[in-house]
Amino acid sequence: MAKILTFTQQKGGAGKTSLAIHLASYWASKGKSVALVDGDPQGSLMAWSSMRAGDDGAPSLTVEQAEGWKAATVVGNLARSHDYVLIDTAPHAETASRTAAREADLVVVPMQPSPLDLWATDGSMEMITAEKKPSVLVLNRVPPRSKLADEVTAAAKKKGLSVAKSRLGNRQAFAASFMAGKGIMEASPRSKAGEEITALAQELGRKLSKL
Image (cartoon, rainbow, N blue to C red; front, side, top):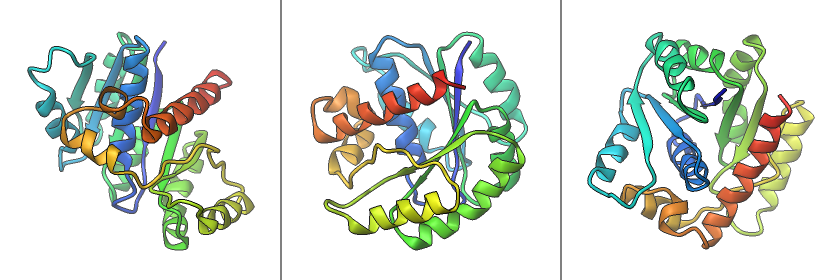
């Protein structure tokens, strides 16, 4: 039975798409069958997928576009033939995000380490709570030695939110691999960025195994 993760955040620019791609590349590198569902009208996942076309050395990843209510049918079909299904959602699209969250085993909410980003998660968390789905916040684009990241984590936990121990730094390697039509585990698995994705994927895997 597939593990289904939905990536949602009402605030744009949090890194949902890149996070989904890099985690997908990790699980694919471990021999798992992985599908990505692009629920954003901007089609960033589909554009990234088209850049992979013709790269015979890249691990196989299924990428399909499905917005709004169509996502449930597409995800259901993919879940029958894949180990992992990762759903990317559009910001500012509450109904579509709610549909995607409803399909998930775990909802992942990326955010940058700032009070503004934490406050912006309120809408997403209210929706996730209403759907009675487990969730985890992931701090993304964290600068080195960030005291603010620790303060934001403490504030989130005070709200009763689950925060991943693994954090992703503000690293050019993530964007560079994305632009090359790759995930970080294909482009630079032994880099610091690769180590961070590995740690996060393993942490999420442990969470999923307990659900």
